Amino acid sequence: GENVEQHPSTLSVQEGDSAVIKCTYSDSASNYFPWYKQELGKRPQLIIDIRSNVGEKKDQRIAVTLNKTAKHFSLHITETQPEDSAVYFCAASLQGAQKLVFGQGTRLTINP
Amino acid sequence: GAVVSQHPSWVICKSGTSVKIECRSLDFQATTMFWYRQFPKQSLMLMATSNEGSKATYEQGVEKDKFLINHASLTLSTLTVTSAHPEDSSFYICSAPSGRQPNEQFFGPGTRLTVL
Image (tube, rainbow over all chains, first blue to last red; front, top):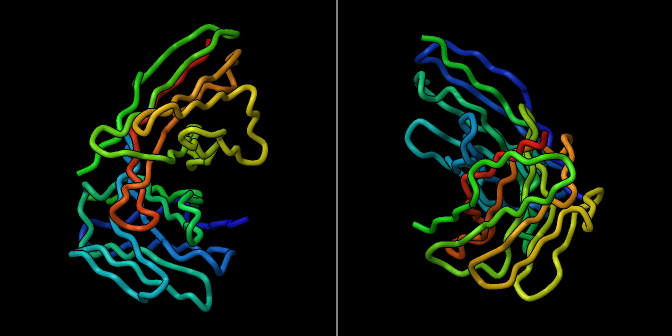
């Protein structure tokens, strides 16, 4: 089955700097790659997603890139703010299967 | 936007008892729902896929007789943790496909289960 690896597990950056989180997946049939932000005790919140027919997608300060050949995708957050502090999860979904396989998560801390 | 609710939001029970968690799609129909378990400081792990009108599909290693899933209507799936033990204490989250975009999921707010 699909396996998603995520790193780093923790990331600390200064406010205003950029943060990058990377994920790799194992199944080349996967075609949907969402990123979620989760605050303590809350539900995962979709922040951006990308499909396999696109190489990059951007939404204001957040961008995601996908390299299908290498089977990895990355989340980029620019001009980080204290409210960006949370745990971020990547996930992958097989075409037609709908169910998500999550990465291990990255605890992002933005230092004022 | 589409909303998924869960009830209860938290529950504390004694070891050996059973606990039922409800997952509802409030303004859309869901023939499929997913149940995840999340231990503290860990990721979400898919437990099972709930299918309306048919048996649930369980992931490898998940005991179907311990985690009973019923998807009796197009808006409700229930997860019953039977004979709960302290190691079952976790954050249980359901999700449902949005129906707007392929593979897109809406998550419920989660249920914190503590077994004493």
